[in-house]
Image 1 (tube, rainbow, N blue to C red):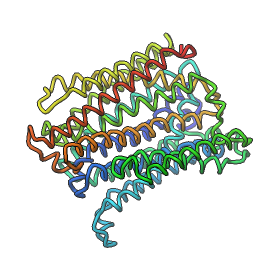
Image 2: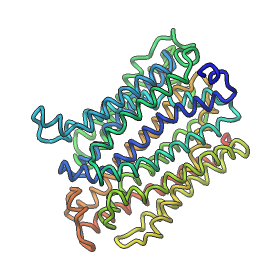
Image 3: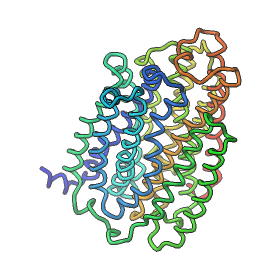
Image 4: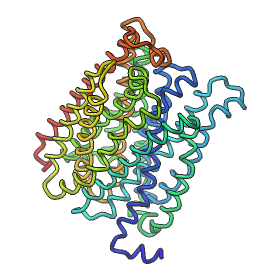
Length: 490
């Protein structure tokens, strides 16, 4: 049976579906955690600026480790790194879900401070998975079918986006928040089984770069660059943007970046080959991917609080309202990926970002009594825009690089996504917290969720949300202009 799969003309699709189980697990996990944030904030009795770290702790670690893991995978092989990541992710998910019990055993009163370290460790595992999944998929699809493969991958992401909020909402409502973490364990076992069976040792256990010297200095510097920038952005609203620690963080980021560029240009086998960015198409693709996820992450982070606080929806209802956001990717992912292979990339990437921007700006005009029809219309416009943009943009990025760089390029794509996620959450939190503070309110979550309609507290939160969505909408237009003006994106 296994030999017939390995020799099949459809082998690329067997590999695709094996990788899809891992992608599905990751996206289900992130969607479920997003829905759980208001519940976790109430459960642990913490503010918006603290509860954001349930997401940021994992996302920061993934972002800082993606490039090292991508390069290491190109050096020692993608299959072993991917399998190790899946195993570790499942174990750390069990620990994250058991934070309250572990805190009680060791005598710590705030389980949030137990959960966050486990989320950091989940981030290490997530980096191993993300740095390899897309690279493995692109390596088995020929160049003229890459858009189709990445579009199908987008549909899997969309399916996870549908299932994640639904599963998360119903687990929180009818079981407990712990299960949004515990459910990852059996899903990871399924991924490990499928991957071990389908991926060949000859093709995926090693590469031509195995004997190359690994760039440990570059790995350390890239980690320092991302951690200094993202932690500084994440803490600016709570510590104060003019504080010494925030200024020091930006200085560390700047000097680390300069030294990283100098080192990578000098090292014979750099972790990140900076010559990749000579391709304007790749540079614009990576940059616009980052801008797109600024909007997506700010939407996913803020909207559950709005739906529960202003419109008084339950977590289960919130999860169902967010389903169209993911359905759009399921429906449009393969469609736009295939069409971009045939008709060109620019028309889809540009129009997708324009639609995303329009949707976000419309979301910025919501209020305490926004109708269900208007809410869903705005979400659908934004979601369709994101779905149209992503597969063609990713195909453009991979087409602009050599196959033996796909591990690093895959890491760059995921890095731009995760950095966008972290930065989007940090920016959204900073804007909402600053707006509420200007009205004399703290950013504590429970008072906002329990606030009465028409109260100044709720109004200040909604005003902050408005500023977030309009800002992110304008940013999408900037990405669209960049794609439209780059002639090498066809």
